[in-house]
Amino acid sequence: MEENKKIILFDGVCNLCNGFIQFVIKRDNKDTFRYASLQSEIGKKLVYERGIDSNSIDSVVLIEPGVAYYIKSDAALQIGSDLNGFGSLSRILYLIPSGLRNIVYDLIARYRYAWFGKKDTCMIPTPELQSKFL
Image (cartoon, rainbow, N blue to C red):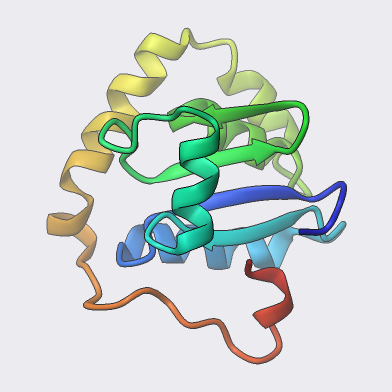
């Protein structure tokens, strides 16, 4: 793995999650992130190494190697803070207590397949994006 890269783990079969990853890739002007699905071997390994209960994770985990990891709305806001044009919005949303943010996050996560659909297999990155995926 590359040093100084934050890792986003996502549900590889979730259409909403895949759309979110495409959104992040387009706005990651500083090439901050690398990506892996939660279903991949590396995704499972990274979750296990951090003692994260994979049954409690509904879609996104952000890992800053050697620093910390974030789940649920904290992960989304940390990711947003590194995207061009979204840092201010992330700082404002951080003012909302995480318990309240996570109620909304959990609601969306619970119904994401029904609302946005689900793929049969994980997303396969294009050749241009392959280097960004672990």
